[in-house]
Image 1 (tube, rainbow, N blue to C red):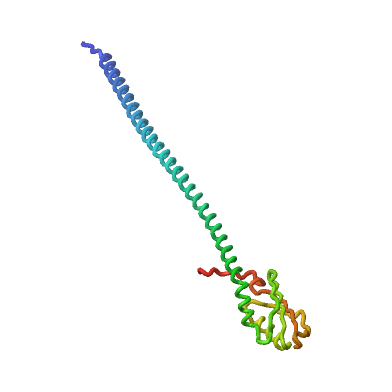
Image 2 (cartoon, one colour; image 1 turned 90 degrees about the vertical axis):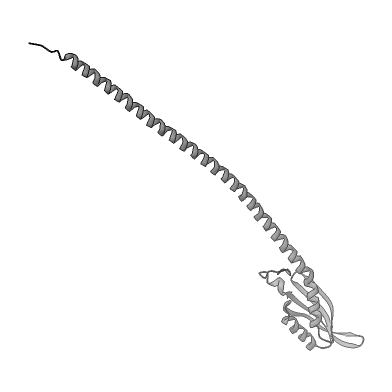
Amino acid sequence: MIKINLLPVRAAKKKETAVQQIIIFVAVIAIVAVVVMSLYFVKRVQIAATRNDITSANNRISELKAKIGKLEELKSLKEQVKKKLDVLTQLRNNKTGPANRLATLSDLTPNQLWLTGYNENGSDVKISGIAYTEELIAQFMRALEASNDYVSVELTVSEQTEIAGTKLKKFELTSKLKSASNPSQKPTSPNK
């Protein structure tokens, strides 16, 4: 009887299986290493891209902050110019206001009534004069009340006087300026 020793074949098969398992293990480790390395490099690229985005966003924010600063400066300059224009408008109105009021006063003065004094102190006005009759003084007061410049016209003094042998009525009136008594009314610019 022939005896066959199968142990070397089994040992060879075990050796071959062990080699195959080592090759598969090394291949799997290599594949895992390649996958991990490729994921690492992809993430590095994404991180670099995100950092670039953050840097560009910060640069854009800095540019916008500079523009906002310039805008705030322009708003401040606009407010200053507006204030200066308002002052100029008020100066123009104050410059022409008394002249206009005196022209209106001249137009409202009836015949046989003469003005001897005119005084403005802020919004208070004091007018003095002489007339032939009290009716002329009353007519003058009604005309002042009806005008666009004067309000609250009151007779403070009315007395008889004689000038060159003629009996006349001497009077004093007080009044308020209409534009000064209504501060909510803003002066309008002649350029508008």
